[in-house]
Amino acid sequence: MLKPEIEDGQVTLADPQFRADVLAGLERRPRAIPARWFYDHRGSELFEQITDLPEYYPTRTETALLEGLCPELREIVGEGRAVVEFGSGSSTKTPIVLRCVKPSSYVPIDISGDFLRQSARELSDAFPELLVLPFEADFTRPLTLPHTISDAPKLGFFPGSTIGNLIPLAAIDLLRAMRASLGEGAMLLIGMDRIKDPAVLVPAYDDAQGVTAAFNRNLLERINRELDGTVPVDAFAHEARWNDDRARIEMHLVATRDVAFTVEEREFVVAAGETIHTENSHKYGERDARILLRAGGWTPVREWTDAEGKFAVILAEAQAERPAP
Image (cartoon, rainbow, N blue to C red; front, side):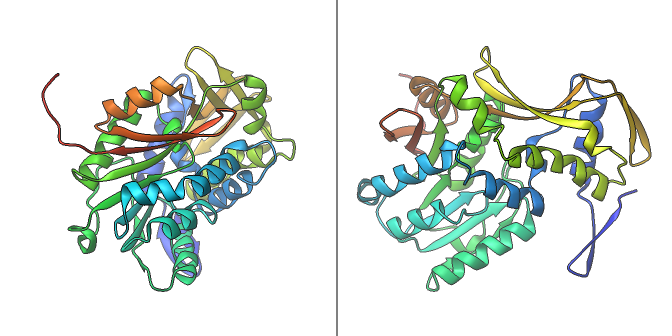
C-alpha cells in the first residue's frame, strides 16, 4: 500500500514507479537505485546548491560556453523555435539560451512537479512575453509533447551532461526518444562532460562542504518519508569513485555498520561495507560523444569546448535517415 504524502495541504500518493524501483533495487545484487529518484523537491534544491560549489566545474564551464556561443547558435538555429528543455530550467543556463534564440515557446520537462512549476514561474516572470508550458513527465520514457507546439520547429536543450547519468545503451535509447518527440528537422543542444584527471573529477562529486553527500543521502530520507521506510540514514556514508574501465564517476551509499530496516513492510539487511549504487556520471571523449549522438539518431553540426577541454556543448540535428553509405 502506498503511503499518502501531505504537501502544501494536499494529500497525494507516493509514485508507484518510485516504489517499484526502490524495492527492486534493494533486492538486487549489487544494490542500485536509479538516479532520477534523487530529484524530489529537496533533492532538486540540493542539486542547485551543488552547481555553485567551487569543486563543481561543469556548471560554470558550460555557462561560460553558452554565453560565448550565442551569436553562432542564433545564426545556425535561427529565431522562433519552440525550446524543449529536458529537465527543469536552471536559473543560469536556460535564460542564456532563451535570450539567444528568442523562442516562440518554452517547454520544460521534469519528473519533479513542484520544482518544475517553481522553475516555470520564475522563467515566466523573467520572460513575460514568452509562452511557458511546464510538462511534468519522466523524459527518459517516450512522451508526446503539448499539441500547442506540434507544428513549431523545435530546439531540444539538454544541459549539464545529464546524458552521462545513463549507461550508454540507455543514453542511446533516450536520444532516440528525444528525436522521436522533437521530430525530423529538430535540433538538439546538449552538454557533455569530458574525460579528465580523476583528481579533478572526484572532488566535483565529493565536495568539502558535504552538499553532495546530503544530496546522496536525501534519497534515503525520501524512501523513509514516502515509502514508510525505517532506513538509518546516519549509517550510510557518501562515496564518489572513478571507474576508469567504464569512464565514469560512481556515487554510492556505503553502510558503515550492519543495518536492518524495512521499506513498505519489506525487510532488508545491509552488511557493513556493502553499498547502494545511486548514480553514474559517464565522461566522453570527443569522438565518443559524436558516436553516441549518431547512434541516437542525431548528426553533430557544431561543437564548442573550453580552452582546457573540460566540457563540450554540441549542437546536433535530426536529419532525414538514409541507408548506408
